[in-house]
Image (cartoon, rainbow, N blue to C red; front, side):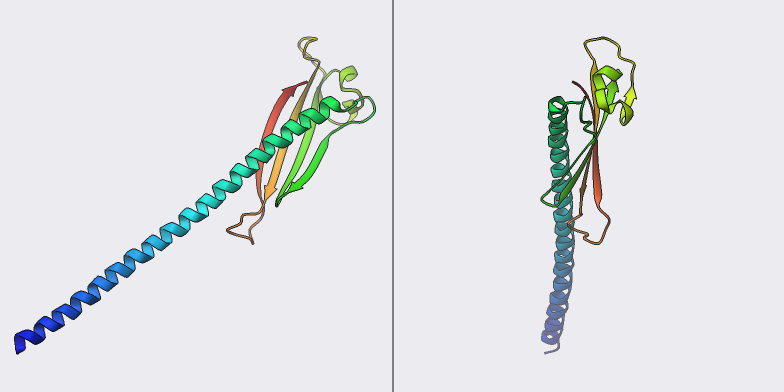
Length: 150
């Protein structure tokens, strides 16, 4: 009889050890899954910000080419889209005749190497967005600078 009771006690001990090991593995898997989801969300948001910065940069180039610099100086473009806020700043490089009305506000240089490159712009795109995994944190900012000949 004594041997039978010892076998029951050993079985109970083995079952408890197996349950502890399985719960530890389950906790590690849950922790790793949470970190993976958080990193995927952050990567998605960075990609969206980069795509918006590219789009707003192209929009700024189109807006500068369509703008009459003799009457109106286009220096900023602002916009919001799906929780992302865009701030676009435009600076001009070129001689005063080419820059027009923008010469007094955002002109960086008058030195132009050749007549074929009369106007160059610098577009700074700032995309602000909130971290979805940490709502109380300050906004994240994605910055892209582009130098474009017009």
